[in-house]
Amino acid sequence: MAGKLETSPERPVSVRRVNELVGGWIERLGPIWVEGEVAQLNSKPNWALSYVTLRDTQANASVPVTCRTSLLRDGTVTVGSQVVLHAKPAFYQARGSFSLMAAEFRPVGEGELLARIERLKQALAAEGLFDPRLKRTPPFLPRRVGLITGRGSDAERDVLNIARERWPEVDVAVRNTAVQGARAVPEILAALAELDAEEAVEVIIIARGGGSVQDLLPFSEETLVRAVSRARTPVVSAIGHAMDTPLLDNVADVRAATPTDAAKRVVPDVVEERRRIAEARARTADALRRWVQREEQALAQLRSRPALADPLLAVTRRAEELDAARLRLRRGVAAVLERQEAAVAGLRGKISALGPAATLARGYAVVQVQPRDGSGDQVVTTIGQAPPGSQLRIRVTDGAVTAAAMGVRPAD
Image 1: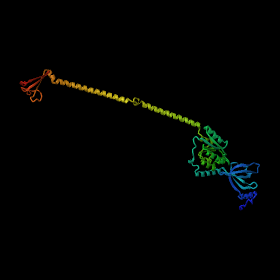
Image 2 (image 1 turned 180 degrees about the vertical axis):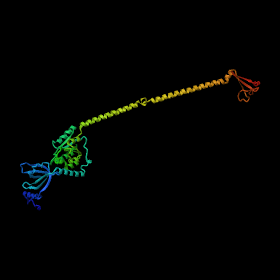
Image 3 (image 1 turned 135 degrees about the vertical axis):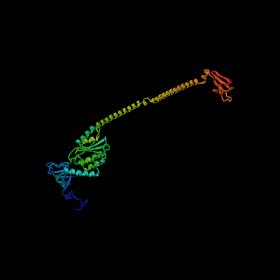
Image 4 (image 1 turned 60 degrees about the horizontal axis):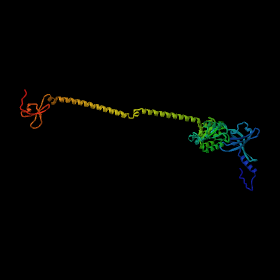
């Protein structure tokens, strides 16, 4: 490389000289192999040269490529194709433009693309971007749903139609972007950032229909995967069909098999929910009625018990028992009294029969002697108790006679 070009306001160089120097520096680079995605392709069969814009899949950078039209006639190179080309850097001095002059195109095979995606998947998984603990559950009834998809696409129609069938009042903020090719990743990133910054948006769906590995390649781009992992809002991935698995599925909070499935996962079915509410109400009302019936039956059983049917029944029964006991006691006492009265009457009869009064009434008399010591009258049963001169008292039926013993005579 030549030394630094010395210039000054007094000694400037011409434009031609600048282009010559730049062209010389670029041409010394020599032929190189370059990989990228075909972002634009301008070619016609009658053109000698065709013009391609090659985009870097990992960064916002592109380079113009010029090639012979014959290199493109086999149809393997199209917009969105992943290619490796052999080209020589060229600088066109007349107009001061840079381009790669391609001599060969080699489309990157699907197997190689899948292998690269797998290597990137393992690297991102090792960083923890796919950790299930990082995934968030979308709200059951989101206030506003963000949708990133292609304009007028089947995916957009499927999501909107299913969402509005399930919940007519659903609020969907649609952001239409490219979903394949060079513009897809930048536009999806911009739409994601816009929806993620909107406070009312509570879940974001990224959707597109199925396609080839190259068609779905933007959804395995590292920049998009990292942007989704940093998003504040839960993201639902609905890319392609059930068998399509771009890396976006691994980092998204929810992976839907199809755009239709995404709408069903995000938007509740208002008819189904109302049916469930009605069933829940019916079950609740039925359970409440059964509970009330059980309680009523329990109360009826309690009320039918003697203690509650007649709260005074126990007192009444005890009063009746007391009355019966009192009656039995009275009867027992009366019976005892009667027996005792009969016994007394019998004893009284015996006493009357055996007593001296009865004997006196039959004409007999009781003789009592009055001792001289004044110890009390004694009934005379022998003649020895009433010697002559003794003072006697003779009791008869109607009174007593005082007499004196004149003499005694033994019995015959």
